[in-house]
Amino acid sequence: MITALSPLDGRYASKVSELSEFFSEYALIKYRSLVEVEWLKHLAKRDDIPELRKFTTKEIQILDNIIINFSEKDAQHVKDIEAKTKHDVKAVEYFLKHELAGTSLEEVSEWLHFACTSEDINNLSYSLMLRDAIEKVILPSLDFISEVIEKQSKQWQEVPLLALTHGQAASPTTVGKSFFVFAARLSAQTQQLQVQDFLGKINGATGNFNAHLIAYPEADWLDISKSFVENLGLSWNPFSDQIDPHDFIAEISHICMRTNTILIDLSRDIWGYISRGVFTQKTKEGEVGSSTMPHKVNPIDFENAEGNFGIANALFSHFAQKLPISRWQRDLTDSTVLRNLGVSFGHMLIALKSLNAGLGKIEISEENCRKELDANIEVLGEAAQTVMRKHGIENPYEKLKALTRGKRLSLDEYKKFIETLEIPEDAKERLYNLTPATYTGIAPQMVDLFMEKEEENK
Image 1 (tube, rainbow, N blue to C red):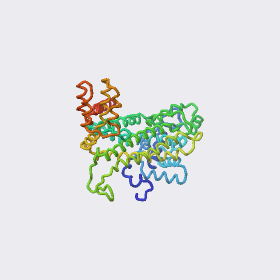
Image 2: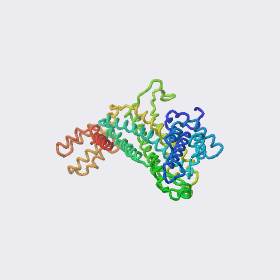
Image 3: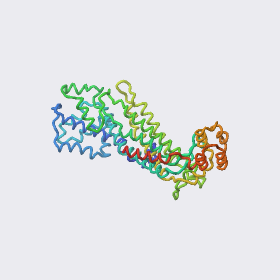
Image 4: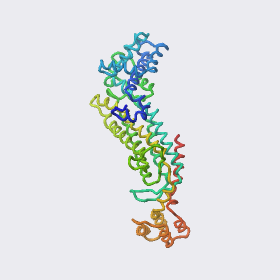
């Protein structure tokens, strides 16, 4: 592993191992074998394909066991065949014929890959790979991150926080409110990924059932195709040339890009909060923050997450731009690009795990939050000038601007200004007793509102 060219296969191999089941060369060969076997079984059930006899229960089990017991040794057997055929899908067909040799199904082995072009097998394999990887690995990882963010949002919903707009002190919020905004954004993208269609087609060399129809002109090939794809758990696409146009992969890529961009935003914000002292990080015995500065506890998990989300997005962007484009009925550029789907999800998964690790290490420093708020009394200028407007005081904005813009204001100076205002006593009292820590609007309640909406969506 130390000689691996890619960090996914070297440094980070243990963090992405669960994706090998879906995106490795072994996985691709297994999924191709699955599609070929299921196509043979599907044709055998059809009354409008009379030359292919029905299979017995025992024969169906023989076919199913090829997939159930599919091993790395079997995948290597396919690769050895491919070394001679120079064709990866044809190698799968020959492997399956070899597996049926000596069984009662040997006589029907020529029905393997019947009327198929390679892309009939490939597009369905990649759709299944994507569906399974997203459902079994990516969505659970996103759900876990969402749960962590929501839990921390609730935990810190009352903790006041100095907001920054344009990097400058602004109207205070709460730590929980700042967190739940990310939870809400992430939830919107996750919901789209959960309902995403995974398309598939099986319609021959250029999408017209040419060979199918010449062999069986009376067969209902649209129904055969539709029922087969849907039985695989995919959505049927009847409209294609040789290849599925991959528009749904572009859609998935865009959802993942938006998801990753939101989490980059979160990673950067937390990085900044750590720098400001809003958060501290738990230390671990034996860990080193800097090779020369012993005091440092670097926010490396958030930096690692940001970097890997960025790499994933670069690939997802290329998938979205390239895969829907093919010269005429098809060229091989999509095949080359599709082999890198696992790389993008690999970097995304590393980033999710790094972000999760970082979230587990941060602790709120309410003391530092209070100090930062107390050092920025001038943020109360918004409150004062708004109440002054309500009660008809002339030029309230301009008066507060002269008092606060570009200046540090002490709490005593603020209170002395409030004492001069000719406004009702109850309004004056509210402003007089106001502090940055209590000037948070309905931020805490917004967290509860978000939690209620999330419950409704479940």
